[in-house]
Image (cartoon, rainbow, N blue to C red):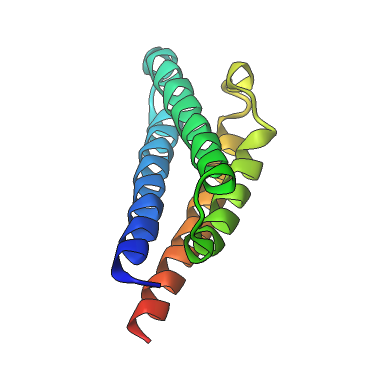
Amino acid sequence: MNSYDFNKAVSVLDFFQQELNVLISLLTKYEESQFGEKSLLQAEIKQQFKYVKDELKKQIKVLIEFDANALVVEYLLPPLCVASTHFQDIGINRINPNSIHKVRQLAVKANGFINKYHSQLANDQLG
């Protein structure tokens, strides 16, 4: 993998790590906040969740349909598909006080998987 492909893969994984960290932060803040603040945070959580879910779908579609570089697809497709699969079961309208814990749990799992691939990619480049 040349440096351009490496940087492309790393930047995509960095982007999703950052966005998932924002989502996890909002979910954690929701669990720690008082009742009045929760309704405002719930709207932010839904917006961020939808954004991450939509961006995952777009990136997967681009990788499958348009990216001809097999190495980039090989590194990016597995973690993005797993993250997308975690979020697939939860609809935006189903995010409510009873499901916040599950959404947070799935976001942490997805972020962990992306982080694992990010670390593996960095180690492969160094090695």
